[in-house]
Structure formats: C-alpha cells, structure tokens
Amino acid sequence: MWQQVAEGNAFDLINLSQYEGQLAEGQRGLLELNLTMPVSVGVAQTLEEQLRNAGVIDVRVTTASPMLRIYFRKGFPWLAVIAAVVLGLIVLAILIIGWRLYKEVFPDGLPAPISAGLIVALAILGLVIWQRRR
Image 1: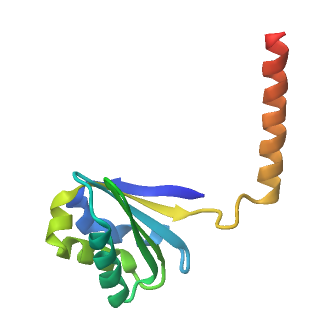
Image 2: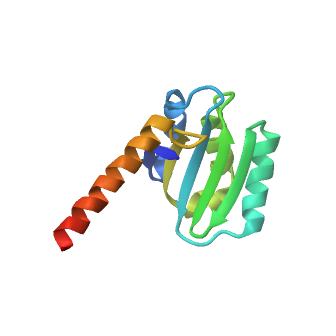
C-alpha cells in the first residue's frame, strides 16, 4: 500500500530532496512523473541504468504512458540523486508536468487487526444495505 508524501510540478523537482525525512531508512519509495507525452521503454531503461550507476538501491523504472514510475529503496539521500539524473535527461525534463512521491506503508499488507476491522465493517455495511433494500 502506498501513501502519497508530496507532489509538485517540474520546477519543484529541484527541491525533491526536502522530502527525504518522509522516508525511513530501508523503506521503499515511488516517484511518479506525469509527462506531457508518452515515453518509450528505451528511455525508461536508460533512466534506470543511470540511476543504478549513480548507486540507487533496488531501483526499477517503468513506463505507463504518460506516467513514468521510479521505484527505489531508501539508503543514501536518493531523492536528490534521482532528481539530478532525471533533470539531466533534458528530453525527459522537458516532458515533466508534475510529479508525486509515495512511500510504502504496509509492505506485507495491512496488519491483522486492521484487516479484521475492515472485514467486520464491510460485513456490517453489507447488512445495512441489504436491510434497506428489503
């Protein structure tokens, strides 16, 4: 489950490193770039290679046009490195119209008490709806 931490436009990408404190050491993050045009798989692979070469841990870049998603694990202050590499790809930087940063909240699913509570709440809601239709 992902929780949004921040969002901004292309000009705000320079200040992305200010959100480092939102991600705990070892936590997985997702930077989602909203682009004006579709980006090829080749561009995504080039970006992933450059991020790997810069030392970003567990990095994976996917494209679901017009979105480009960068998955990573926090180790070093990677957000500044990621922003620098993205902005270094001039073509990609020109295409960015907005971005969102997410952190993974429950990597192994919801905790058992929350899951149980959701199941009970949905069951009660279902009964209420069923009774009103009768």
